[in-house]
Length: 181
Image 1 (cartoon, one colour):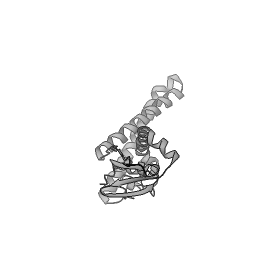
Image 2 (spheres, helix red, strand yellow; image 1 turned 90 degrees about the vertical axis):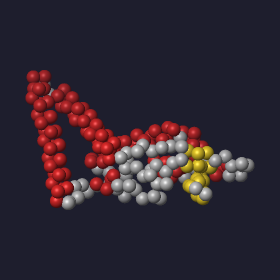
Image 3 (cartoon, one colour; image 1 turned 135 degrees about the vertical axis):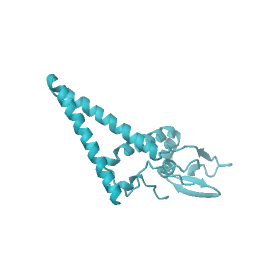
Image 4 (tube, helix red, strand yellow; image 1 turned 60 degrees about the vertical axis):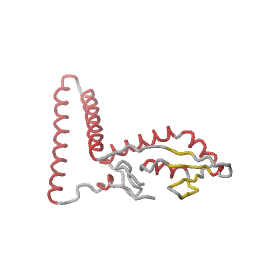
């Protein structure tokens, strides 16, 4: 069952400034998964050939990185067996129960909005601290007006493109579901 999340960019999809928040979120999830699967990663250093089971079929051997990519796409739980343990009776299959972070449209918008609000807040602090003390209120106000103007301009540009049926971004496919491997 392929429950591809909206979080992970495909191989052919470009990363850009617009996809930065989701790229960071995908990195955070991959890091959390690596931490959770430390014992498997240590074992894959010795022998990085794994068999995996899907329904009644067994596939492999595959490298553990491919299994991790499947888990990140939401294809869990996955029973796995290291190639070095195939001869054991009974074969010690290990089921990896990992649930990918479900990023639907609402969660993606909330993450993106929160990310950019933090970025704007950090920028505000840096800009106001970099200028002389008497000019800080004016520089801070100018910074916030500039950010608000950019946000309005991008929103209007997006609304105009949506009304005319045009594609807004060259990398808008970044949130599309990926193809199964």
